Length: 140
Image (cartoon, rainbow, N blue to C red):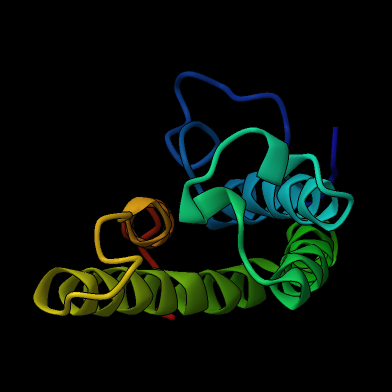
């Protein structure tokens, strides 16, 4: 149990402690990014599928690891205001990368235009971050 209030045992009568919060988004997202980045760096992901989601450039794997460590650190050690501000970044960037990447893929005829997996993943990240922000009431 973490003492900053973000990860205490959820009380069903206390809506700010249950559900999807910026702190939970950052912790879960950070762990997922670290696992995906490390498994991509050692080649495990590319053996799962040929989809673009599982085959990013090698340097992207290390970007994911670094961002994952930073996100988990903010989730565990940052205050609520910092957590909200950091969650705002993937809410915007994930949505923008997903929408523009998908639009570019759909309206161009490149070799990767049929594979929308990476763009859908970024849209999901943007949606989950936006959901975490929407569930908290204080402004960023």
